[in-house]
Image (cartoon, rainbow, N blue to C red; front, side, top):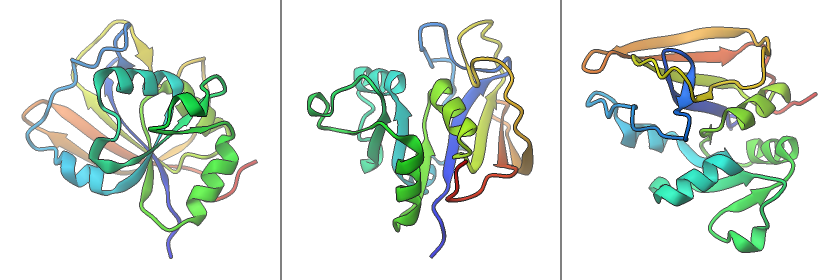
Length: 180
């Protein structure tokens, strides 16, 4: 049995933002070459932070493609959000999920959660679709200053219709199933 991977899969503007200043993502094109159904088939669980969850809930994107949703939050009460699983401990949760059979785990949205996972060495792969737009401001991919993380390029692909380029990286030194 192979170990499940934690994969960040996100769209980003050329100047490093994953959402506009108010969380908007209307700048992300629906490229006809991207097979979103195929992408969703690679995962069975979405991992998101509170802010991403609240945005997805507001926009009606919860339960996408039948994926189980885990929300990492220290402030949300589980009883008030029965449609998702509220999680307090990222390291223990990811360790347990990796040991279970299933598909990869989608680290979805949220630069703060991404940073937290990187600091704990919980991210195995990073897939960034760089969209040819300059937003000027917004929510950065990696908030809070420099966090040196070596990456190894696995592949890249140009989507000519929109000019979007998808980069896939392995996180160097990511130890599947281990945390510091």
